[in-house]
Amino acid sequence: MDTRERIMVEALDLFAERGYGETSLREIAERIGITKAAVYYHFKTKDDILNGLLDTMGQQIDEIIAWGQTQPRTAETRQEVARRYAARIREGAKVMRFLHENQTALRGIDAGARFRERMGRLHDLFVGPDPDLAERLRGLAAIMTMHAGWMLREEHATSDDQMADTILEVALELVNGKP
Amino acid sequence: MDTRERIMVEALDLFAERGYGETSLREIAERIGITKAAVYYHFKTKDDILNGLLDTMGQQIDEIIAWGQTQPRTAETRQEVARRYAARIREGAKVMRFLHENQTALRGIDAGARFRERMGRLHDLFVGPDPDLAERLRGLAAIMTMHAGWMLREEHATSDDQMADTILEVALELVNGKP
DNA sequence: GTCTATATAAAGATAGAC
DNA sequence: GTCTATCTTTATATAGAC
Image (cartoon, rainbow over all chains, first blue to last red; front, side, top):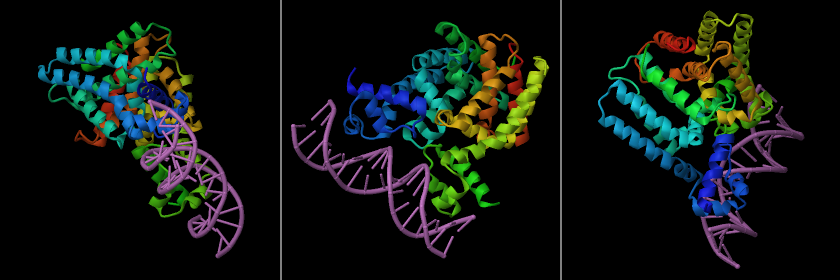
């Protein structure tokens, strides 16, 4: 793993653990055993680290959204989007939880703002055409469940597969609308 | 409104808008038209402002939880806890959304940690005895819906009453368990 | 590619005048 | 109760040596 990558890994760890604004470049550098100046060689600014962090995940989510937008707005499409999104998130659970739990701090940052837009488009895919308020709320609940559901992992003794399945199960109930 | 109160109001505004770590005492003071030193007369530290902010809401939530814990663990109790919690939250929507969207930043702070515990106990009230994972996830989704649901307020043209009713409706569906 | 050294700005916090 | 003034620490960021 090269230095650039190590910076991103440790940065995500610290951002997720203590918050974006609460984490300094000095701390990131210290964890890796390099100096602040070395960090600045790899990233132009602190925000730039965040950009790098969200880039890959953002592109993958965009692909899912783009696919969903070409499909008919049926329950089957919503379910398939949810399945794809849940699978994508699982690989980047730490990033998503960080995003979910740091929304305010990221609001003023480019990468954060772009993510908010993404979530808006994803939300649209999770409701039918001309949705009422309850339907929108269920779509929002589905997204939040997929983002934050993994935080129950610690207190519930089960396998990661079981965890992923159940999160998807609950999310699907929600995108399927009122019972 | 006395100065102490004005500090709390503006602080909450800034914390909710830009994040806790991203907001400085200087900014808070400037908004009110006093100096940083004046803020320190009213609050011992920055964390102390947050404590003051969460105190009232925290006590009210504790009362709801305490009541819920004396009741039998039935669906009716869960529903009544949800109703009381939703009503309480509505008055302090800004605080709750701030808490929801700044979890990471607040993790390292006393008042934040206490709130996490509170949410844990509330979560327990939102599931039946011996809940499976799906039930726990629905309970979590119910809490998140009540906390973050109001963020759809801007994009959905309706009354606050309608908003509150629908949020509660979706939350109740979730605490009522599998259809 | 990483370092030392430094610039510059801002943070949280305190002492003491008014 | 609010101020000026100041301390101390830390922050982001850059210049230039190795």
